[in-house]
Length: 177
Image 1 (cartoon, rainbow, N blue to C red):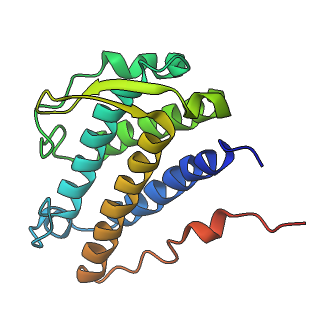
Image 2 (image 1 turned 90 degrees about the vertical axis):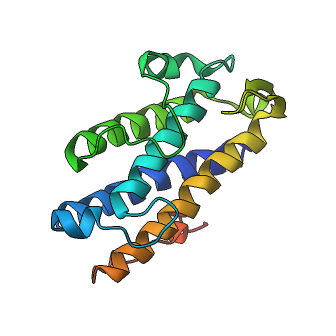
């Protein structure tokens, strides 16, 4: 197996889980969706907003990678003002953006090869600090961040009385042989 394949799997998992969570959110009353439940970003919607913000920031950085051509449309998106910025405040346009980002993530990973994982990527943090890090490890952080906050979201759904079902990556790992 090539080194890029696990990242492609994570991209598919990302799309699959986001779809499941947004479907579950669509069935909630607005107060259940937007009510502050004491999470890092308050509500289910706040957590979704943060994930879109974080992904937008990282994808803008990833667009500077030599294989980043499929991410060019991300460069046209406005840069979020902060990590807790509310860009949409409503599930429908937020989901539209989420779906757009997920399609771009999968397309980017389809174009990326093993050598691209070793590329050093220079970027600035949201506080302006310069960094240069190995791209494959940045991708690991990118997908880990999403999983971390989706895990929080599933807890918030549980508090709202919604079982989102199986959330394990294992569901997308094919059987060997």
